[in-house]
Amino acid sequence: MDLGSRALGAVGDRRAVSALITDRLHRVVVLGAHCDDIAIGAGATLLQLCRANPGVRVLAVVLTGAGTVREAEERAALAACCPGAELEVRIGDLPDGALPAHWAEVRDRVRAAADTCPDADLVLTPQSADAHQDHRLLAEMTGHAFRNHLVWGYEIAKYESDLPAVNCYVEAPARIVDEKVALLQRHYPSQHGRDWFDAESFTALLRLRGVQSKYAHAEAFMITKQRVRFTGGGDD
Ligand SMILES: [Zn+2]
Image 1 (cartoon, rainbow, N blue to C red):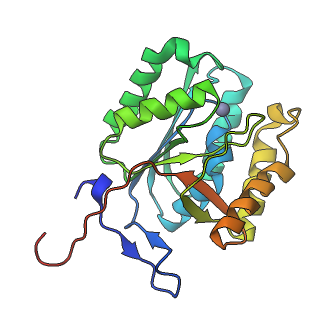
Image 2: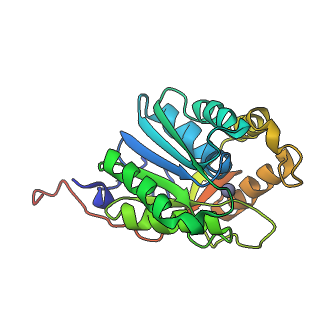
């Protein structure tokens, strides 16, 4: 069964109608333009995904930051985000803020990730309407390279008012909210001077998405395309 059309199974509780989950995850690809993007956009999801799927293989590709203080921060943060996972981290040396001028290299690195993980169950990448040119290009290249895959676009709050009308919510229990926020603050000291990099902003977005999903807190994603195939009826 290819993964873009994997069958979905319903959670066996009273919320089954709104809480569809996939089968067990074996292979996940996470993509970020900059060190900290993945942890900010999908940290709570990765923490839970990895614990729910012990030994899941995670390939994390970050396009910028290699050879700087940010690389060490990112490697430690991603290791913390992926407990129990078999994690591979690739950090590139492309210039922060100028990825569109290096689009072919971005394309090649995303393609390389797809070549490494043709069987990825889930791909996490920036949401495609992100106002940051680096994020947006990465989202576009992800769509080109992972054509038969389930791709979730994560969101990052910023000065530009680009938060999307998301359509996928992952519950973040209180302990996960605390763990994500602590992880971000602990592992990215180089970002502490930024006016948006604080517990309040991270928690606020999780709470807002919780309001919209009837969870206390949630991390949210944009799914631009989802294919569904029902199996088990005797015809597959
Ligand atoms: Zn970024």
